[in-house]
Image 1 (cartoon, helix red, strand yellow):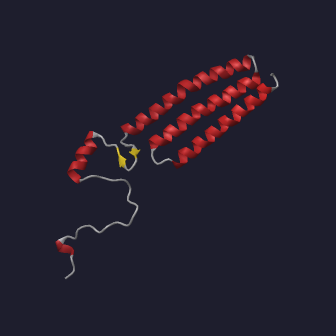
Image 2: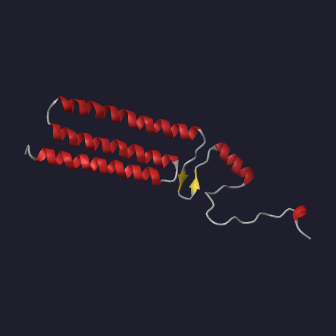
Image 3: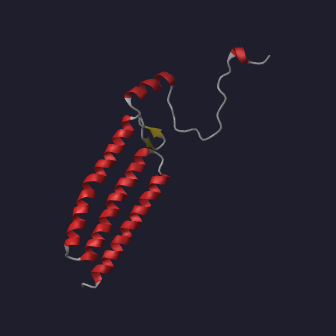
Amino acid sequence: MTDALPLVGGGLAIAGVLLVLLGAIGVLRFPDVYTRIHAASITDTGGASLMILGLCLIAGLSPITLKLVIAWAFIMVTCPAAAHALANAAFSSGHSPWIGSFRIMRESDEQAAVQTGPQTGPQTGPKKPGPKKPGLQKQ
């Protein structure tokens, strides 16, 4: 039984590293700041938990395990709080989240959209020519 604990601990640590790498890929691939924060915070917390659990199994009952548990508790408190602070700062600075093919708008954005027309996501095709002004046409 004691021979299996380091193997299981090593497997959990490797799984934690892979989860953190997936989160890094998610940060690079996701479209907006909110999904990037989500990818970073969830995989950071989960990956760190798996790595620390694996290291606790490798270390056994020792003072190192107590230090790892204290570090885990610190990560569990600070990572979600940091993600919330980042998302709050992004929303306060005017970033609106993308959901599917539309964006969530604030009341002030909705009033501006009513006055100027609805705004869609980024244009992927060629721009359509706008209406020509009467004074600029060639005769």
